[in-house]
Length: 164
Image 1 (cartoon, rainbow, N blue to C red):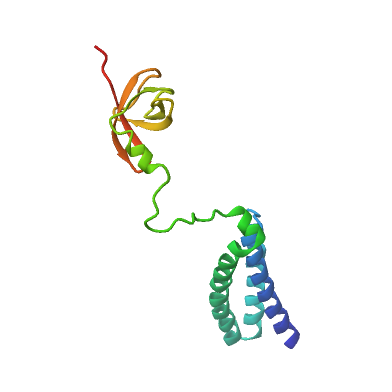
Image 2: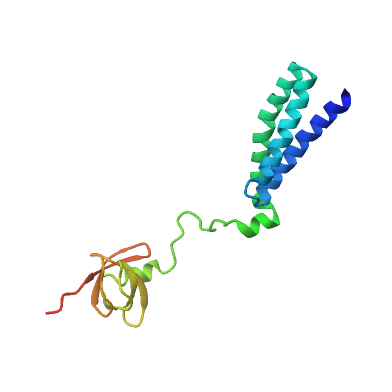
């Protein structure tokens, strides 16, 4: 009778290992199905032994599964594989200025030519300086003259200059 209980505990450990593997190996849920099968087998063995052992097994599973998932997701970004597939946040600190923001503020009121159609975002040329711009009024064709009417952070808003 003790061997069955040892086998049930082994199935619980196998379930935990499979849950960790599911976090690291994309399997489309196949590993999760195997983990659930191990968990179900372990619970069935505990209930076969006694009703109290079965409910204790269910309680342990209710604590074990979230704990293993949390542990796996916390350790994942620290692994070599996790570092290669996750995005790292930028290293900017509060108060750091975005590069070229001051140079872009100098373009307020400047006139230029649209290089690529603004739909509403595209490229404009201001005295041999190519800058990404946002059109104030939707679509602007290539070659039209525009004027910078607003600079906010790194976004320039332009308006078409009506030719007379």
